[in-house]
Length: 172
Image (tube, one colour):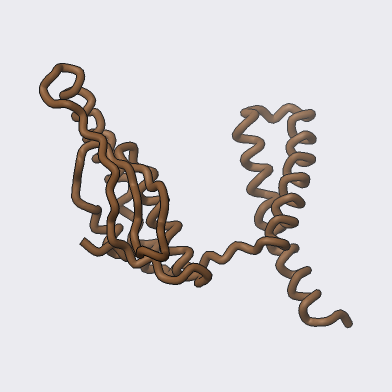
């Protein structure tokens, strides 16, 4: 029987392939929007190629992403922040267009508990914070600095950090 390390690697590769192949095939079907026989075959080939590539990358550079359930659940208001951000950027643009108020575009630094560089849980919190802030149209995160324990982001207008960001580690 092979050594434990080899068995664990094979188990990980098979798990990654087991999840990625159907997902990539589904992406292909949504992308092409048809069930023509040749597209179904091309989709299988594309999904296998993408799945193998994804497995090779994961084998050499495994993702270290280990969020807590409460941190993932804290992202539930993201759709609301998307709507609110759309409204804010529309209002800023309208005021600028009609000469009421010049649009304010600001770079901000927000104190954020970024944690340690090589900690899977801290990596996950940083990723969740970046995604939550960047998905809204009025902000984009430019970086999470672990040395300074801060997030650098660009914002149209100026608003207070959302409550969900404070749950992930923002300090006001």
